[in-house]
Length: 262
Length: 264
Image 1 (cartoon, rainbow over the protein chains, first blue to last red):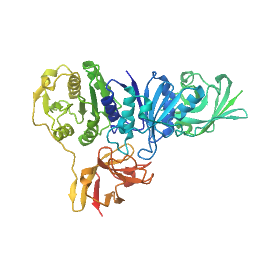
Image 2: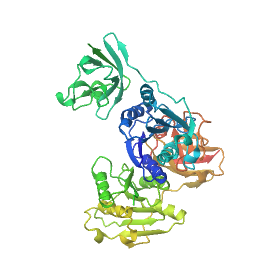
Image 3: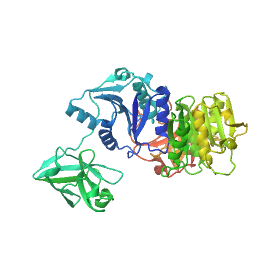
Image 4: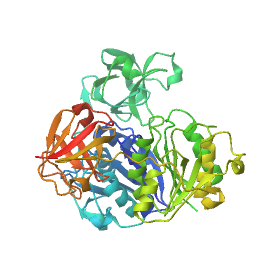
C-alpha cells in the first residue's frame, strides 16, 4: 500500500484538502493519506519548503508527497513531479523543492524531475484556480498506482529554486538567520549543529538579547527563561521555557542571529 | 469494505467532538477512511455546509458516505435521516442538509431511498443525535443497507441554495462563499452567462470589466499576472479572485453580498 502526504496552505475550513482526498481515493482506493499540514501561511512557499525538508525523511520509501502552496496557479508556472532518492514529490514549480534538492545534491542522491504535461493523468476538466484538485491529486494517485514518473511528463533540469540564505562565518563565530517559527513560538535558524557544535557555543545574540551557551532541553530552566538549544531537526533554536520566544523578543523570519564560538 | 466517509460539521476543531465522531465510526466500521471536509462551518449555517457538500460530492468515489452535522438540537425530536442517493450515502439531520445530494441525484436521474432512523433501534449508542448519526453513517460505511436502519420517508426538508434573479440586462446573484484567501464565490453559474457579451460585474460599489477566464481555460497567462479577476471558478460558478490578496477585503463584502452581472 502506498502512502501520500498532503502539505498545503488551504486551511481546513473550505473543504479543499478533503476534496483532494476524494480525488485520490477515486483513482487509488487503497492508498493511505497523511496530512502533513494545511496551516502553511497563505502563499508562503519558503515556509512550506522548510516543512518538507524537515518532515519527508521520516516517511517510508516510495511515499508520495503532494505540496500545494501555489500563488502562481493558473499562470504559466509549470506543474512538476520529482523523484528525489526514494521519495516522490508532486507540486508547482515555484521553489518548494529547493531545500530537498540542495540536500540531495550534497548527499548525491538521484534526482529526476518531470514537467507534468500529460493531461490524461489529470481530471478531465481543469480549473484555473484549483490545480491541487485537478492536477496534483490525480497525478499523485496515478503515481501510487505505479504509473512511472516518465509517463507523467517530460524531463526537466531547470526547476525554480528559491534563494536560500546561507550562514556566514564571522570574526568570532557564525551569522545565520531565522528560518521558521513554530506553533509554540520557538524560533528555528539555518545554523546546523554540524556548523556550530554545542560545546563550542559561547554566546547567542538575537534582537538585542544575549543568551549564554546552549541548553539541552526546556525543562533544565525556569519558566519564562530565554534559552538557545539544538532542536529536534539539528538546528540552532531560540525558545522561552513555557512561553513564546517569537513574541518575547519580537523576531520574524529573516531576522539575523549571531553565534560566538570558542 | 473500505468505504470513504466524509465529515462536514459545525463542531469546530478545538474540542473533543470531532475526535469522538472518529471513534464512534471506527468502533463500528474500523476500515473506514474518514475525510474531513470541514468542521469550521459557522454554528447552524446550513447554507455554508451545503455549498461545501455541493463542491465536494462530484469528486468522491461511489459508495462514499457523507455525514453532515449542523444545527443539531439534541433531544429536539428532529428526524435523523439516512439515505442512498444513487452511488452516494447520506446521514444527517432533517434540516435541509440533504438538499445538494438530492439535487445531484435528481439531475442524474438516480434512484433515491430516504429513511428516518429508528431511535428505538439505536437506544444503546448514546445520548445525542450526533452519536446516533455517526453510528448510522458507520453502519452504512460497513455495508448495512439504509433500509435496515429506519422507516422510509418521502418528505425530507429541502433548503435549496439561493438562485440568481434575472434582470433586464443580466443577473443579480449573491456571494455564497468566501474562502481562506478571500476569494469570492457566487451563485451565478456559467450557464447564466451564456450568450452575454461585454460583461460588467458590479460588487461592493465597484465594477470589474469582463470575465478574465471562462471555464475550461486552464491558464490565465494571457491576462495580467497581478490584479482582480472575475472568473468561472473550480465549481463552475462566477468567482472573484485577487492575486496575492483578498477580494473580500478589497470590496468590503461578506457572504450574502449582492453581485450583479450586466452586459455593457
